[in-house]
Image (cartoon, rainbow, N blue to C red; front, side):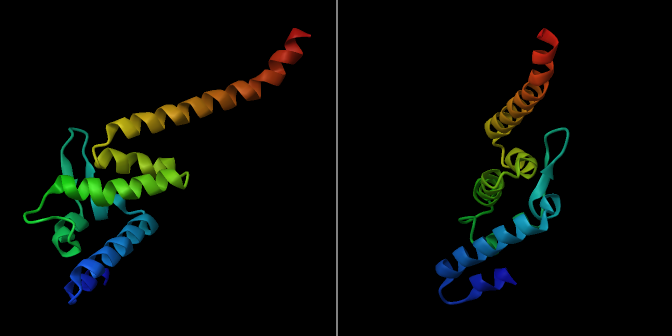
Length: 131
């Protein structure tokens, strides 16, 4: 339905609105593989439904450019998930967008948080043992 916005006379204004609506759809549905595609174990990308519809969203100037789609729609969705604390959802999205630096940074941050929580939980036990 949101794609129909881009068919009107004020295409630039409606394209932004359609992009926002589709971004919300991505985040609410959680069907990242179906809508955005996925990265297989061998590193190849399998396009999702939205990449096929990207020209209607006016995400891609001229010929279809997958990198523009992934850096636009996918990376913005990943950043929003990360900002909302939904790091498990952000990881595959950053991976799909090719932002491996963000994947490693997010994993490192979560690992540090887990280690710190483990240390904090074991600290009372260590103090009791030393007395």
